[in-house]
Length: 149
Image (cartoon, rainbow, N blue to C red; front, side, top):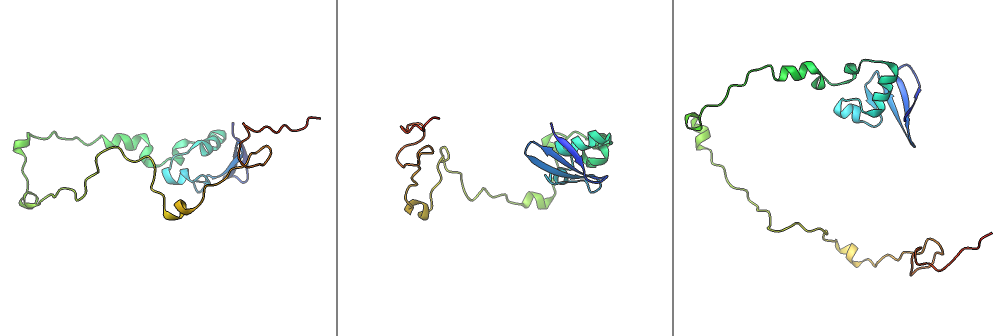
């Protein structure tokens, strides 16, 4: 559950676990930046809007409102006639569509990337045990047991 702290009348800080986000309702901005990109209130902005009992439509883009969606389907779409009855202009009929220049190679794509020369020339990294600090084994196979008090 996120906790909300008001800074001013329009600026709020939303604490979500270890992270915090700053919501500005007057500018319709969020430090997470999703409110600016999609113009939809995401969980942080939604929590503030819900707590303040504000109208959600004021913070959504017009593209996501019911009236806009209804207007999208308001125009009648006429069905196409049979393909043999289609009429094209001369410039469209004269246009030549060429095939792609490159073909995708057959087979499954490689799972491993080709390493650059500097990675190939570098030696392998040696990992040390996190318990005793010695190289050559890991914590699971370590024989060192710390003293117990």
